[in-house]
Length: 480
Image 1 (cartoon, rainbow, N blue to C red):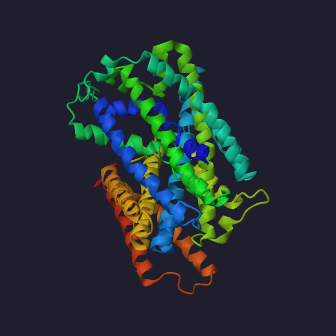
Image 2 (image 1 turned 90 degrees about the horizontal axis):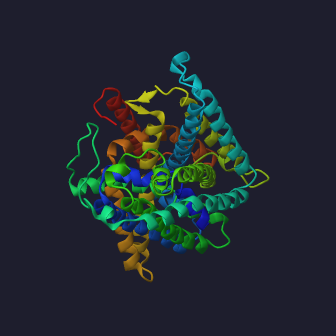
């Protein structure tokens, strides 16, 4: 379970975190950003751990919303989590496509325009990525436990190059480089001029990079129903977080002592490959790129598990029709896995059309942004439920749990505001089909009127929000 937590979160982000952070701020603001995000997410992790201990009958983080606020809110939280993890798979597909596309360019296969703006040279990479996705489908469909074991092996393989980078970086670390312009943003803007960015804006600019690195931290709670003991999931979540924060802070900050902020900000992808190349030579870049491929594949396997297991749990709770929760002879939810994989395949096909954009954003960028905001919804409900549980039961140490819940809730609400409420509004569009599936599931469960007046009002409000967001986006009133 610890491997599942770490494997779910360690994907592509860490390989480029140092460059992404350097583009937002200097070493000083970045360290403050890690402190804020670290404390905030530690509070969230402790909330999840506390709920797992006190409510062992709850099988996943997606059930916390129902336990605290009703079945409809369970749907809102669960669907948001499925959407986030499904689109996370799209992110890994796009990054692997980019890596494979670079290989195609080495072979001097240039962009060839086809019908409808299709890039013909992208056909082979898209076929390759699709085959990878369906191979992962087959692995998961043969049994979740087997896939988790495979994920553990892949995790070890992808930590090797990261460890090499860290050791080499510590050896090459120079304090004078790290401390130079410690609070000043020395990254250049698009015009090549150095920007004078306030410290808080630098800190804020780091948040999205850091938050995305931890998506998947709740992985153990999603699989808690399969653990020998529910406390294993609580311990794995905390241990996984400790491992992750150490990995992320070290690997993102040590490069600030190897290269200047301006040099880091100008690195290509993956940034760690260029960092290691500057220390040991070209073979270092080869090693890190190989690690990136292994990391992406391994994380993609873990993220194939998460949305599939989420739909199974949602079906078991009556949020979705029972077919989504039906298991095959290997204990895998084949129908849920198939639906999720087909959704991912649609996005992969859209990569054939590089000119397709949503208000200037590629389909990948658009999906990635929605994934981040949707995941925050699920995290917020987990923090809210821990706060309510601690306040109403007042058991041993309830004051501590209540304080942690309040801090986690405040932190996540702050992140939603900083990320931008417009993305939450846009994610409402995806909830419309979820409402139809929810009504169908509740009717199948024997409820004559599954939509109460209160639920109906919320459905209409979310539907109106979805329509308004689309209209505002189409008319240019809001910008992504």
